[in-house]
Image (tube, rainbow, N blue to C red; front, side, top):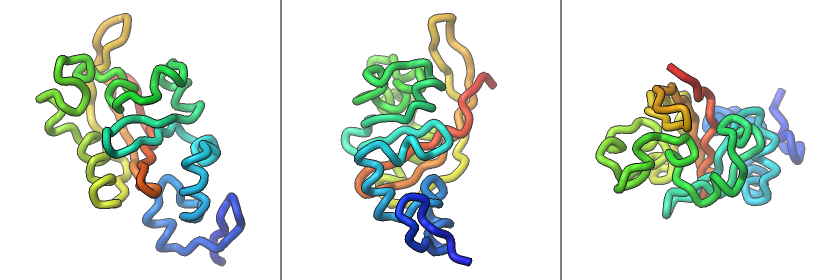
Length: 162
């Protein structure tokens, strides 16, 4: 039996489900439309960031992401990913994604590759030094990425102290 889009009910191929780990239950047309009106983000049962490619910044996030990071929407919109996660290197003079410590960040690499090639990434994991008011701690971050039109979804699968 073929899968149906959770939004419009149209048939979704097995190939689509394999290529779209984040939006596997939503057809491409609904995913693209939903990404721009935020309904798609809220329908995903995990913290999700919607990012633009150039400059690589967060456009918006769903409520689950705001709860996970303990932030308000204005604190994440138009910020780089590391700023949203509170990565220590996002506070450097060079800034998120440009600091020398960001060169080999697997999270950054996955997001950049998704923008450049359209390829999704699943379960990309990396330890990050997270700066909170209480100090600096190592967190384990795991994400999956998927391109939706000219934007990218970043689903946070793990964000906790290592």
